[in-house]
Image (cartoon, rainbow, N blue to C red; front, side, top):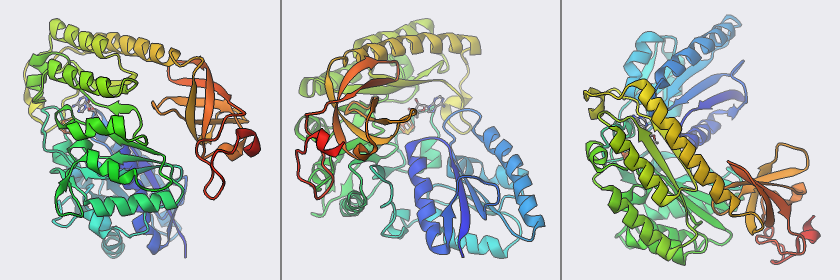
Amino acid sequence: MSKKLFIKTWGCQMNVYDSARMADVLAPLGYRPVEEPDGADMVILNTCHIREKASEKVFSELGRLRTLKDRKGSSGDRMILAVAGCVAQAEGEEIVARAPYVDLVFGPQSYHTLPEMVARAARAAGSLLNTDFPVESKFDHLPDDTGAQQGISAFLAVQEGCDKFCTFCVVPYTRGAEFSRPVAQVVAEAERLVAGGALEITLLGQNVNAFHGEGPDGRSWGLGRLIRRLAEIDGLARIRYTTSHPRDMEDELIRAHAEVPQLMPYLHLPVQAGSDRVLAAMNRKHTADDYRRIIDRLRDICPDLALSGDFIVGFPGETDTDFAETLRLVNDVRYAQAYSFKYSPRPGTPAATEARPVPEEVKTQRLTALQQLLDAHQFAFNQGFIGRTVPVLFDRKGRRDGQLMGRSPWMQSVFAEAPERLLGRIVPVRIAAAYGNSLSGSVETGEFVLSPPRGAAAGEPVEALA
Ligand code: 5AD
Ligand code: SF4
């Protein structure tokens, strides 16, 4: 009998990937995803701990779910309530103590044992806590056909965890030590995704460019080499990767940006701050100039590369002069887009015990100033596309009827009037307008569809498909 599974996901793309895999693992037990928690047989909250208020959000969500669980219980049924992800890993015991009606609490490394955990929870009263870092890799224990149904644009985790220990970050504690999947396993999953309809794959890892998976030759392969191998898969049109660390931007990966046409000209390379003093206090182990030099090398080899980054303002001890250095770095790099955050002390991280906190209002002012500058650059970057024709992978319907949305190679969202049959194709779009976060344009008829549907002749004109 089919059972209803509701998963709510917070945080990064790795969590989105993990949630999909949890659904895969539970499918053989009869669980099918639903859109609403009401009436579900199992609810999983897949949580994120990276920034503030993570656990409060989880507890308030649990409060609401308790009512639904009680309602289901009073009609003689049971809702299994689970908390997964990084909050579960970091604060599992507190969850069990404060919300004893939660049945399962488990960290990011143990969800392959979900069937077992569910069976134990069904038998036992009280919460089951599983925040171990198991010796075996979950990737070796996930069903083989998983992830195949992700659609046109798919995620593939190739690396997990982090050994960098930036002083503000919980990831090394919640996700554990750095780990890379073997190349053959990654290639097999990528082939399944492509067979299932993926044209684009984004390789995921907390520190993805630290990838050093074992190759079929028994040697350690870097991310650049892995990307070259994946580019051999017939039908895989686009490859991306995220998130990277400046210290792992190796030559082979940089060269791949020039030499592998499937590798998209977009790189998310967080720097966090522009002051060397702050970078040292963050334990980043690179200077602002080291970062500038990496960007120069990348742009030499791939002039149209769009850069993205992450910034933290108000790290303990950050002065006005330090912050001015961040603005200077942003002006030098000119990001195509970026994310910026106020520093938030995370329990258990070294920076959380630092004296000299930056006052909240100063953090707010700095964040506003930084975001204004980043927004201006993003807008200017987008404006540069007006009048150009760019290949867009349409992967969803637009907000208005008759519109499709997709991504340019540079990660911009592009919308255009287009017939639904162009969904899942890479289509030339002439850009007519640019906005802060997107572009709009019209499909170039008479041009050639860049990725015909499988089995159709290449180079079919757009009209023939429309
Ligand atoms: N406070 C604010 N931002 C943080 N990030 C990570 N930890 C913290 C923190 N304690 C940001 C970093 C990282 C992104 C994923 O989240 O910029 O790159
Ligand atoms: Fe966190 Fe990234 Fe630093 Fe690792 S490299 S500790 S994931 S910010």
